[in-house]
Image 1 (cartoon, one colour):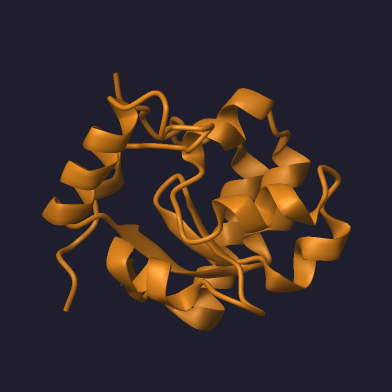
Image 2 (cartoon, helix red, strand yellow):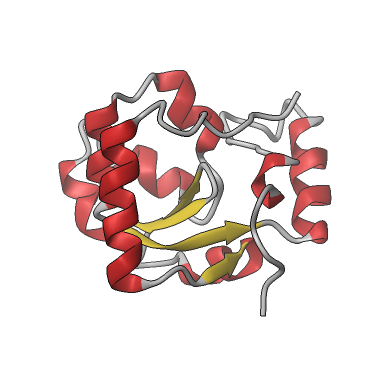
Length: 140
């Protein structure tokens, strides 16, 4: 069963902060393939709940350590983010690093579904199969 995004107003302060950030940077659409390409040595980009974040500057400040972010770089971390039970404060902090909206391509959905069905390969990887496409326009 795929995750769904939080209900609107479930985190009202986060929604306000994220909306303000979007006003500043706009809302570019970043595909799963582009997310993977953006991530690499010296860069850590993550997708979470339909948005993409550049958390590179936060690596040394993450309470769980930089390794957890680096291991999940270039992927959709929605499931893991929710399992940890991050607070609205954590979401607000995350919003500081917003760079765009996430769009999972059909190929990405197939790969994510295959990974989710392969327990030996799915070592804590966060997989959101259908909700990643919810409400986002196709990439340019």
